[in-house]
Image (tube, rainbow, N blue to C red; front, side, top):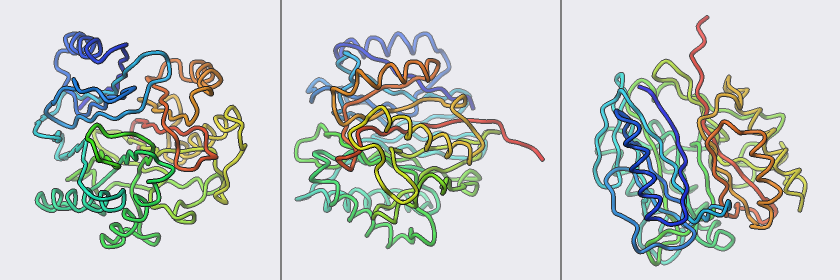
Length: 335
């Protein structure tokens, strides 16, 4: 199975759909696994599509009005249904779910319902969150007010599932983003695996540089290695400028926060046996629009050959000005 990430941008959603169609026509044999559209505002003309496809209001900051991250594969069996893509390759089955929302009075009740529905989905297929889920994304509207409810509900759900500081959590990003469905405060995307790859997970900590997340009340892993298809895939969660005591570093200095964030990510990748040169894509989240002019040249110089997009999406702590997530791929080392 071959894998590819691409990020496309356009002024309008209609133009983006056209660019996407042109891209796919140039890539015969490739099938999308996940599509995530980043919008500057709620678009009523957003198309309903089969598979793991989500829309979230997280404005791209490069002047384009919309963007999409597409993860693709070739040489694998791919099946689509509502909000779900199933990829089958070499005895592994990957279940990608996207755009998951639920009704409820607040972010906590919605998060509980989303996770309970997701647990039911997994159990019906002989899986569970603790053993099979590789990664989640939580998009939280008005994060400064709704994040605490999401975190509390996720922690309570994870405790019931046996996800504890003494066991492990999941790679994850919790970031500001507005769902398109009115009244929804939380939206989740997730991926789970059934098969040999589910047994190869290794969790990454870089303890000289970062602290365990449970020390400041949240429940996710900094990173995770997964082996399949003859490669190690290193999944790095949303990572910011933090030290190994849980302190935010370089208050009000987005340039220094960016450099520390890079250092933290680099050390997690090193622990997983990879480096920046192995990255497949990067998603970057900025709290303040005006910081784009400072950060954009830094990323353009450092990651010229990596697909990335910089989005307006406040991080979970007001003092954090920037966060990034990424995935790398390296060949298995024998001996």
